[in-house]
Length: 151
Image (cartoon, rainbow, N blue to C red; front, side, top):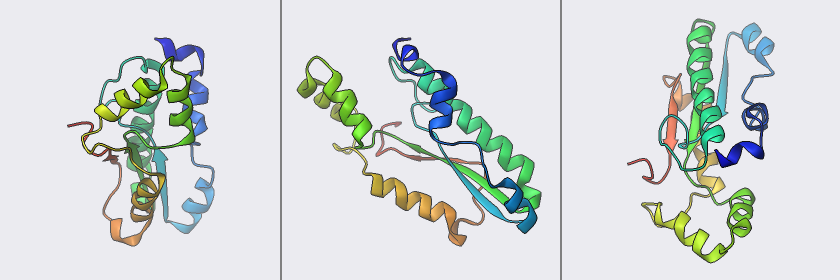
């Protein structure tokens, strides 16, 4: 479990602010939309050396489903986005921290069925959809956006 020394479970879960802070407003309005961030590296796909990360991201999926079930009658929806590998500064730091960054980059890209990483913009567009009225019938779901990695 090499990833446990860098982050406590609490830090990994709370970095994404998974717990809603505006619940009182949503309850008063009888409407709301919560979008949590999980990962494909969770209960969806096992990933080597990511035990703590994967466990906490699986917990976010469970939290999403529980919140959706608890608050559906109050008009509050809750979903979570489960990205695959996204080209972010964090990913670049992980790649550069490896003994051979070129090999690490190649290894990351090999697992991408599309041959590339997702962009933050692609993830944001899914969030915009989940926040919109067009997704009014979507609640309690982990929505996978991974370029086919989990296939």
